[in-house]
Every structure is written in C-alpha cells, then in structure tokens.
Length: 439
Image (cartoon, rainbow, N blue to C red):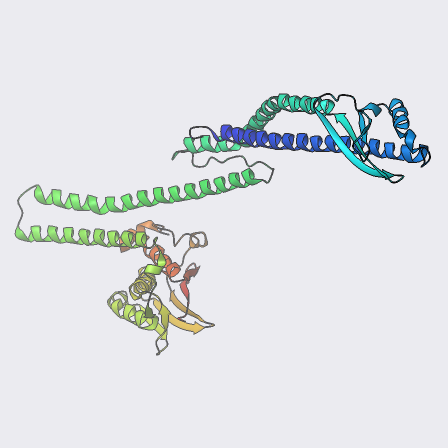
C-alpha cells in the first residue's frame, strides 16, 4: 500500500472489508437457507409417514389386518407422492414398494405397531429442487458481488475524496507558506467533526507560527540595529586613529574608547544570551534555595555609587530574617539588579527609590518604586517586550537596550512568579514581583 494516496488506500480498505462482509453474509445466507429447506423436506417426509400410519389405524382393524397390503396400495394411489413410500412388516416382507427416486434424494424412516404386529415405513423425496434453488441463489450472489463492489468502491472513492478535500487544502496551504503569507488561514467547515477541529488546530498553529516568526524578525532586526551603533562607533574610532600618526596619549584615548564600546557590546551580548537561555526549561535553573532578602540588600549595595552619583534617596523596607525561595540565586540577583537599574535610570537627579520586601499569604512580594517621569498607559503592556523602550533616545543616552525588563520577567516566570508594573505620568512607577514562598 505504500505509494498510494490515503483516498486510494481507504477505497481499497473499504472494498476489501465489503468483499469480506459480502462473502461471509452470502455464505451464511446459503448455509441457513440450505438447512431450512432440508429441514422442511424432512418434516414433509415425517408428515407423510404419520399420515400413512393414521390411515391404517382408521381404515383397518384386527379382523381386516390381512387386507393391509390392499389398503396401502389404495392409499398410495390417492396421494401425490404415495408411491415414494416403502412398507415392510416385521418379517421384512415388502408390503408396498417405492418407485425409483431421482438422484439426489433424501429419506426418512418410521416404525409403528398395529394389531400386535410391527411395521417399518420409509419415505423418500428428491433433493433436486433444493439443489437447483441453492445453485441459483449462489450464482445470483456471486454475480451481484462484483457489481456491488464496483458501485460501493466508486461511491467510497467519491466520499473519501470529499472528506479529504480539507486535507488537500491544508497540504496546499502548507506548501504555499512563506515569510510573506503567514497570515493565511483555512476555512473551518461548520460540521463540527474531526476535520473541523483539525482545521481549527491548523489555524491556531499558523497563528502561533506567525507570532513566533514576527517576534523572531523583530528580535533579529532590533539586535542587528543595537549592534550596528557600537560597531559603527568602533570602526569609526579605529579609522580616525589610523588616518595619521598620533601621540601616545591620543592612541591611549582611542583605545579607551574602543574598550568602552567593547564593554557595551559584551554587555549586550550577555543580555542576549541570557534572554536566549531564558527560553529553555526553567527547572534547570530554578533549583535550590535562595535568600531574597540578602540578594536585595547586596544588589542595593552594589548600585550605591550609581544612586549617589544622581543624589537619589534610597529607602529600604526589608525584614531582618532570611526570605527563602525555591530558585537560583544568580538569576534572582539579575532580576533585582534589572529592577533597580531601571529605577535609577529613569529617576531624575534628587529623586527617590523605595525598595520593600514583604511576605503574606504564602507569597513573597518585592516592590521597587521610583519617583521618575512615569510610563504612558499605552506602553505599560509592552515594557516587558524585548528591545521595547518608551523613549529610545533616552535609552541610548543611558546605555539601555530594552532587554533588562524582558530578562527580569523571564526569570520571574522561570521561578513561577510574575512582575507587574503600575505607573502615573510625572509621579513615578512601581514594579512588583510576586513569587511563591519556599515550601
């Protein structure tokens, strides 16, 4: 069956099953009919023998027992098949002879007592009519079977073609898919059957594929764009330095710029790799115990110089006891650092940043609140998207790439948590991490 289409295979399978069903049912019909016909022939022969016995009881008595042969001849002459009966007395003498029965034939025997004597009777009947009827029925079944097979095969081929029409459309749609028409969708039939559900599943898969491809395109384009700027700066610095001989201090200054640009590119590469690793299975990273209180205090201490540089007031509201979580300490440290870094970037000089860590109802919440410029309402739904920046020019000034919050959210999701943001223009923003406590 390899190499045949599903439509052809279904037709062959249906035809084979139909042939088997017809063969079995035909055999069963012929066998049952044969059994019934022979049963009725036997019953007819038994009735003939009982009729003969009743006739002798009715027409003779002990005084006229010697006239039984004559009575038998009289009876045989009045019955349609009376001469197909043999009667023997107890000594084996033939009282009534049977005419030759056409072959094939069937016979029944009966023994009865009459006036102290025993008689054995035998009736025969021809099977020719039964055999001819069975033969006619067999020929009819065998002759009609090919016609039925052809008719039902053609019908099945047509029905399977209609049923698989949607599958053909899916095949054509799959072959025509490209980056330019991922928005194409299949028509869902209103039947509500398996093919309808298959079409719905196919459309859902196309939707996910389109979203994934769009995100990949955007990610690739944004990553290329982010690398283009430092690479251009790196090339420009090198070309300007090599145009003419320079003093050692000028070379030192140029190399310092190269190192700065290389550091930015290294940081961007690490963030991209971290984000890519964040798409893998979370169980490999979210293992072990981590003290979130200690991690937050350490992250605030590490960024103390940045806060002081902008004269930001930092308020800490953290419990003195450990706050244990099921998670990976390095990942949670990156998450907290991303939230603090975001707060210090967008809080103007002289502003404030409040950090609080609380536990309630089996959940740990970390809040980072700043007094910055706030986030527009239409941007709140996108701030955790990769490379999304509310103000691109400001991000370039601060050295941001729009990856910090995306990485933080991915880490939170890996730890069965989530980050939500609240903001009001001109009043600041609050980023709240909610994560289940350690069991």
